Image (cartoon, rainbow, N blue to C red):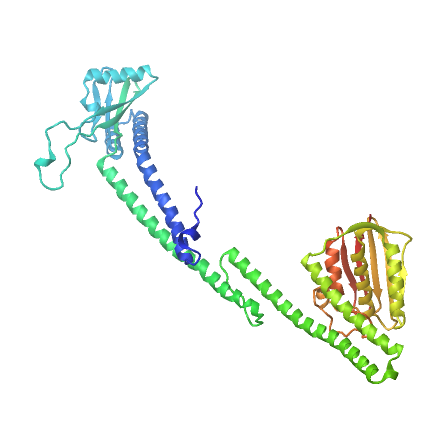
Length: 492
């Protein structure tokens, strides 16, 4: 069946009702056409088969009751109910019983010799015989032009009769032939009734298609229109917006998707505001310090000490780190950077990282411990994995406990190398835990100003590890018992 593109026919702005009406009209027209074609093509043969079946059934009923004293009553009832002509003859063609359902029955127009031939044919054919007989019921000089009004036409109409013959025996062993004559040509009344019935069914089908398309389009379009109107307001991040609608399963799924989208938009808006606040804070503070110290050293030359220069350098480094982290996260999420997978010893790489980072935070009073095996080769992007561990260490330093101790531990289990970064801080609350990996999320707890951090590190960890084959990340934490952040990398 050819595909119908209603958008090309009606346009995209056509109401759903008209499109559905066109669909129902198209298919109802096909159904009606098929109904008419099959109805008139098959009605004649179907009518013929039914009439022949009735004739055989009547003959069988007579054979089963041939010895009944009320046989004549049964013959009359069968002739009347089944509209058949019935005749019972002996082997010589003598008529024993006869009932006519109509004029000009074939069997009633036969001579005794012809009737006996039916007996003989049935006898030779294992007790039953059937044949079709064509005849013209009227042969006169009738002309409809000779009369006025709506009178019958004058053409000759051929009729076909089905004559069924069945040999029976009574209780005395005497043989008889039961002849049943059934007219198999549909009558004018039957044809007219069938035509009226087809017209009525066609009208009702068309009306039902119209009503159904209207009701169904309303049931489908009303919630869709409502959801469309609500969807336009999602971008405004209106917290009071209620996504409603229902009906069919697909519409309910659309509603649920819009509700999820509304929730996501709300969270993104919340994160956006936090991002602006956090970035503004993280930018303003080092910029203020840099400006203040440089103005101080400009106005008071004696203040141009190595300590003051170090403050400027540290704050500039903090700005550089913040900008780099934001760029890195943006590239990771957009998929702009591909992984450069190589085989390397992660213990050797982390040795160098922890040695450098340990010295960086040592002057702030922090201790960085490194527990590891001798060698552990992995298949990963060396630069990105180094950045991941660097961010986890920074995060641990930011939220370390009073002991200011951070432990980095490397273990090997099966085909996986696991790197854990452990702190003894306050831990992560269960309500906050699902969000710590989200972009732009930052805990409400203030991190220490003296430690290097931007608030974007865990988002970078999530993005990088999600791209690595076999990569995994997570956290084990309890409030008041510190946190263990870990990543798992596939062994080479």
